[in-house]
Image (cartoon, rainbow, N blue to C red; front, side, top):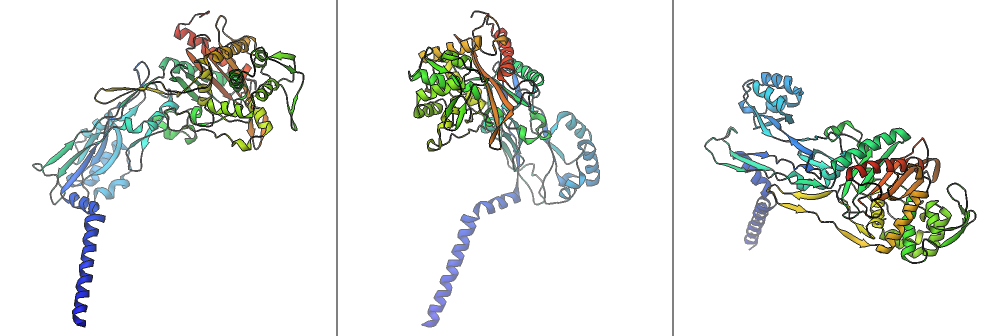
Length: 558
């Protein structure tokens, strides 16, 4: 009996072992073994899809593809490896030692020589008449407008498998749309690894990527890039940015930040330049924020343009003293004058009338503390501190744009609501997506929420027009035009305190005030000619506005 149970147990163990082994082969390692088996009788070649184009609003190209090729070698067809290597090296400039060992490996059916080889180089290689040298189309990105809109576009690099991948900007955000779907050629091969000419061949053609049509106007973008470059030199700024949005649609008409880079040669630049500061970097908005807080007070009916307050000296908030920017005080002034003179004391008065809960609610409703949803890869959003962590001085300083961090795209979108009747729009760079077969997908303007009423929008617009006409920057304003705007000068926080000598100067506004065609934000970091936004960012804003008026055909009085 013992022997019978022993034999039965051995057979049972053997059966379990065989079952587990079969399970491993068929389920766990099935795909890998299938691939290894297939590789013994077939060879697979990828046919790269042509990446989609990126076009400006008038359908002129910003990014297209130029003819280029993947160069490869088939070791089994090479008659003289030494001669092959030296010949290819002469044209490609490749390091022979990198591929010498690979070509000598008889198990390899092909060896990569170079990616993105341009047509003139391919012609030289073909002229060598080398057997075992082959090419496949592999388009290369080309930028007809050179480095224009680099931060908007992003660039194309390689992923971990060496295939094209978009990074940053539109190339990163819309990578799946742009890259298309690669094709494949599968050939049967013999025992030596050579293709069987009469064997079965499967070919699936590549599906090219989709084309993006942008809201970005190439003429406007050119104006911004030229004027910003001039402004940075003129005012001795470290950095600068300009963004223009259509307040009715949320479409981005132009966007530029300097310093920048060239997408064609992105590896030649510092990686810190790749991110777009307009969507990825934060700053304290300073007095430009006052128009938003003022609109909240008017919407809540706790103030009106004619409401008065006493500006007789610094205002004490706990142990802190809130002062005006120039330490001048004007006695009894109304809310319009508060905005004209950019009074910090006056804005604390508005915040106190509004109340803590309402102030914080409007800050959130205007879109701060959360991403805007703009269609670029690297957008970030500085977080708002928790309600329980806000102190009396935090509410006070937030009313005039200090102690709160925003991104430029958040700021221009919020002010866009003052221009369009109160609506927070989702900003977009892409207007249409065109599929490879011609079908057009239109991206409709998206309203997020209405934060103030049309009536409040009109009231605040008139107050901002008065701030331009009577404020510190009135000397630079184009005559005959109604422009709504507000200057801003914010000190830069460094190691827990503000550096009095370093500022971010800004100006935000929209025009024509009665029927806005654009809302624009200009920022200059650490201008040396003057720290004040009224003497740097504002005149740059007005210079760009003059160009835009001419471009749009807007005449004085409109």
